[in-house]
Image (cartoon, rainbow, N blue to C red):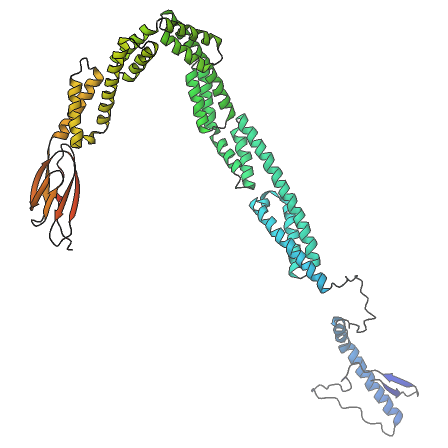
Length: 510
């Protein structure tokens, strides 16, 4: 608080203390300086001394304490005005949201976030980070802004941020689709042109964006195999220049075995095969006319028929076949008889049957056809039976079949001019019959208590060890013993092979 004092001239003087507590100045020893003594009777002189003391204190404060006080005041923060009317808000305030509006924004933000997460998963699958560039960076940045706003419950800011992010994401998806489509087209074109390196590059680009693209994976695999395909194509072209059409076709087929979808190889093979068919057609036509000239009408008919299979609309082939038919009608019987005899000599009995049947259809009174048909049918039946037994020799283990085989050998032996096929069949069947008829020793073991019976052999009684002789085949031994469960042992006897000992013993009590 300020003090009013009167100086020597009689004027009032205001003395302001610099700081509270400065009324008593400390002495050198640290004790407080005593306050000024009360004025004595010499009022004027006391006032002077008092004024000088005050001035001395003020001077000391200005020299030593004022700078420190100024620094403290400068460092001290400005007081905030408590009166709201004095504060001026320079930024516009947003209108407060109602709880209903805030909840609606929250739901909208959550819906957008769910859509964004699905979109981001698709972009991650497409490796968008590796090709999206600045657009991908914007996508990530806007998504982060939306997330920050969402976490701060600033849904009014999260909604537009998420919406912007989704728009950028759709642009990225479209961009990936454009890249994939262009690369797929370029890869396919490169494959067709035989450019393996470019095709590999383009399909690899697609797989870098979409690793699960099966079409691109197949294209890449084809591009990697293309050098081998081209090697075979070069070989085929060299063969074609040399006129080796069959070898050229084989080389093209090798190329297509590596890549069945490579069109140039497929087209070249089609052209080569057409040339081969044309050559084959001309060869068949020449052979047909040559057969006609020698009155080999049957062969001529077959050659012209094969030519028509290659070129169904050929009038030349049709005319040749018609001439062959006319020749067949003129000498059909003689041709049939000669053919049938030839088939018999070659022991082709089914073909001989066809010829004799054809002759009878032409004239049922032909004796050679009737006798030949009976003979061919008998030999064809015998041939079939022999072939069946030779293909299934185990059937000879059966007694009835073995007996029938012996009778069959007797029949075959009575045939004159048997021919090489029948001779070979009967020789082999006789060997098999001999093996099937030769007994084989079979060792049996038991415990001396079990009663043993072998089907197709008979009861053997109880024994510790015995041997039986049986023909090759399958046999069953039965063991019986009072108070024990019967046992059954089935064993197979092969021709010329002594089997391991067969043990038959009842060991399981009832």
